[in-house]
Amino acid sequence: MIDVMDGGFFTTVQDGGRSGYRHAGVPVGGAMDAWAYRLANALVGNEGDEAVLEATMAGPTLRFHVETVIAVCGGDFPCTLNGRPLPLWKPAIVRPGDVLKIGVCRAGWRAYIAVAGGIAVPPVMGSRSTYVPARLGGLSGRPLQPGDVLPTGAACRHRVAKPLRWGLARSASRYIGGKTKTVRAVPGPEYGEFTPESRRQFFAARYEVTPQSDRIGYRLFGPALALGREREMVSEAVVFGTVQVPASGQPIVLMADSQTTGGYPRIAQVAAADLPVLAQARPGDCVQFQPIAPEEAARLYIEQQQRLGRWVATIRRQWGGE
Image 1 (cartoon, rainbow, N blue to C red):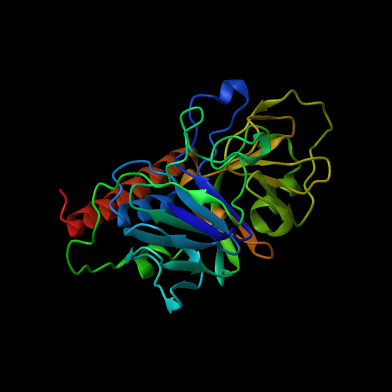
Image 2: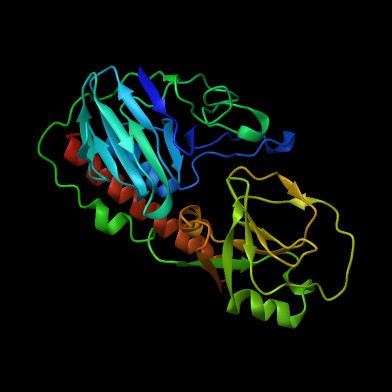
């Protein structure tokens, strides 16, 4: 068991998401930064899609009741274990009574805390992910609070088998820093209905991430975008990374917990490979959209997954696995 001494700003249980229910209006959800999520799980020896804690802006303080292995990946958060600095992107052994404290992020926006065996809250609709708008999954469908107790699952491996060389911190976290996040995007279904100037501005200007941004969507601020002619739009499918433009002309990038349909014109779709970059954007950061073709977006995603697979395989070998 793990005691929650402080829940942080907004810490939830997340896994790979809740697939197969979009037809009923339930989004996939899951970890916003799939890159950091998967590597955190690999670092603690978890073989599959185990649940972790996703912390936003300021992390939790946790007391452990069992000996286990943990890893913290994602944004640049100051972490201490019993008051001593704990490096990110590396596994660490914790023992009964140890206290992990994760502070306020210095760069990026989200951290992923993985535990050997995963966070073993009951699955809801096939997933342990927390979907706060519907109070589904996680711990009573809400962020962590002081006094909560988190169960952990049975670990596949319970110790770090040998001295390890984890070269992840520099290579895997390159997308975290910087005030401007460049994300590649494919023109959306309604892209051609925007004025030529709006189409130019969308890919030329920088849009600021406003404080009115969360796991549902990022509201951006920059040059207003306009349709060539006003029209009523029937609700259409939207997914993680869809960029909609409401009547205000200020784009909204839909994130992991967004609705499954929307009635605003879709000017673009962010490439899946760049969703982790968006997940680490914080209020005040700027987003620069870069146009690419659908074929290029697919190629980038395949290459990213292959690279991630190589990292995971390397980690498993260092664990002593196959």
